[in-house]
Length: 70
Image 1: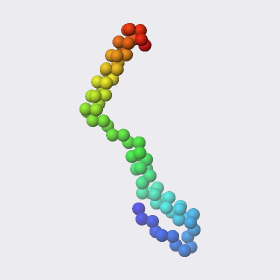
Image 2 (image 1 turned 180 degrees about the vertical axis):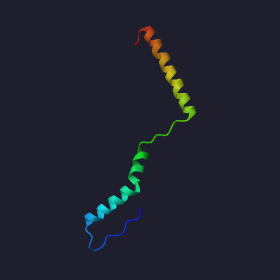
Image 3 (image 1 turned 60 degrees about the horizontal axis):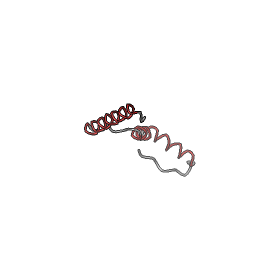
Image 4 (image 1 turned 90 degrees about the vertical axis):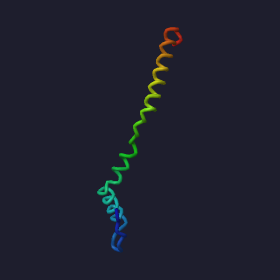
């Protein structure tokens, strides 16, 4: 994205307008917003580890529920 410098007759407002139009056309902001909220998928090992922890917590909860501690 290349912006031409301000000419003598051009106002600051028109320069800002030209810049914003160039940014919109280039798609820089759209791409940045997409990347901002993009999350990587966890690896298989991490998924398995989290599943094991979930199962352990569930077993502990059910055990405490039977004992009346919950």
